[in-house]
Length: 306
Length: 288
Image 1: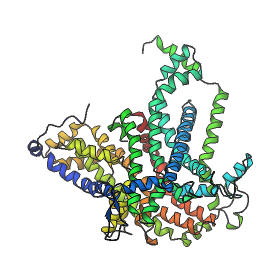
Image 2: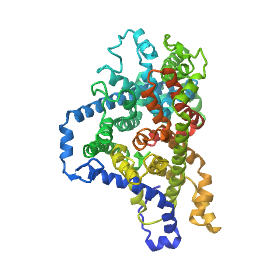
Image 3: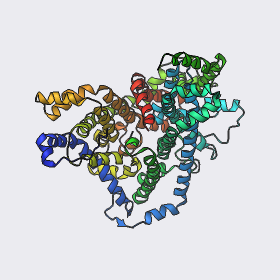
Image 4: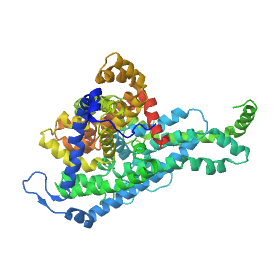
């Protein structure tokens, strides 16, 4: 049933039924707030991105696309983009791959499926700030549990510490992102796996297909759309990362964890460089939008909303 | 399914069943993974209950000491009670606002006929993909203009509408039989009367799902409070925790007591509402 069938109701007809006035009343608060705090800021942001302004002084100047040119020429912004891409790739690949493996294990008709699912999901609902604080401590040399564990399996802690080492810091941040994201992917994958009719597997078994071939020829093709969906959702989510970096490393050491969200925040609220910061916002938007277009293409606009 | 097929299917199920040792191996892998997932929680708990003098002992995951003193010390070192109050006010405002306003709007989109309905709904949908980063700066300027910096209004009002909530509830309302509306209409109920007396009482699970999502979002939110709150007395729990880390960064027992404090409400709410929550997350993939 298409619930959004073309609307042919005329204004007068609608009003006669009492629908129009009721709809105006019902929608007024949502539309008003939405206009003020979502639509207007979006347009405003577009203006800011072509202005030179600190947000307070009366003098602001129109500078065209200079801000965009400036940020793309700045090494700091390009570094931030590349850090964000690395973080996004790391979290997405690891969380989708591990999520599928764990979901397949969970789907193998074992006891305690719900308990496992619950435990794996706990980090998803935990505040990122709290998670970042705890993980920072877990990685503390000497007294942190993760640090001691990594030593025991033979990894030499880098100097000066895991989080202050330029090659390791981003990996630790990715680890926390993965820890937060994994449960979500498991739950979605598991629901998808449970949707595959058991008969398929039974028929394949009768035909003599082993576990690996069943996985390769039944599970993988049928789970592919969900995998794509999760990859897209994870990319969008990871690209907007802020809290975990702010708390764990504040972008350091030497900018190796400075993601775009953090750079934007600093440019706007520490250096009051609203033009550059807004331009960065629109670059983020453009990238996220490109990924969203892929989602729309495969899943439709309405289906992508949840 | 006909009678002859049934036994055959049973045989196949038997054949597909895995041997016991395989189940054991799967459990071992899953328990190892689950262990990694809960380490931070165990660690938080153990540390927060440990006497300060013992912090530098080798790490031990299971609590061996039970000392509430850290919590008292943490709550004294920073006004966590105040942070709690601020977070509760903000969260209650956002949850209440999102549930009521989304429900009203969703009712209009699901049940009422008016010109421009499709277009307006699409506008709501489309803005869901605008990253918060884009509207962060102008939103701050608007709040500043309204003189709302350091106020509950700044924390609550901009987030009282949720396009996601409208979408979720609209779908839910489409599942409620229209015959109920029509019966009420014959009895003389107004459009909004139908929302209040028919739709709202029947949308418990939908409202609960939205309520839990809104709660988790609001309680854990960080960036927006960071931007609109300067006054230490107006800090939310998450802001307070981040600042606390900056100040008492080396006093780990206190810090873990603070972290525990910040995490507990979401864990409790999630454990109570996990059925609705996990279900709606699971659906987000299946329908795709």
